[in-house]
Length: 199
Image (cartoon, rainbow, N blue to C red; front, side, top):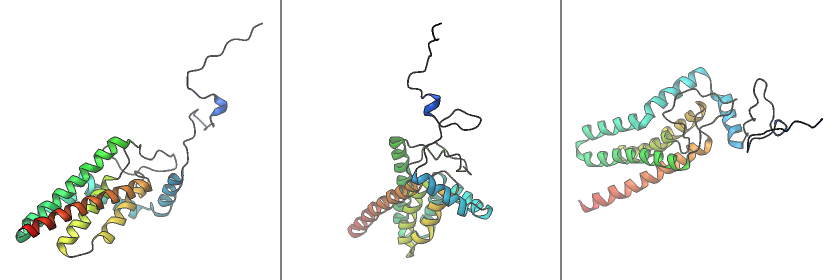
């Protein structure tokens, strides 16, 4: 008696090629170095008080709204340097927009490891770079310059870590976001310096 022919979906892996997860037949997600780092960050820091603070930071930095509000207040209060505050605030808005643009080009998905908890909602499924890290770095550099204070060490690392604690970004996402934010801030600083010299 001839054996019955088997049918497979083109491109689909056979059962032998996939590792079995109890209750499913889905492949085990690839565990990368960044995934392991994310697990360690959450394992060490994702305690209730830290998660609560991280969620508050997430809300503050969503769409750079908190940083834009601070810039607007600075422009209202510091009348002598209103133009500089407006330029700095515009720089923060530009940095946020740039991060969104890069996300749409790279299209990296957010962490999906089953051992990584997602502890906050996000406006999109795109991960690289972190917009929160981008806008926070730009704001820290530009506003710090206007206030005569070094805000970057106090503001940037906590925001970067908070995104990993919440399980929504890989380490490279926050590092790239901070680098992008710093680059935008330096460009805006040069623009402000030239404008000041012309005036």
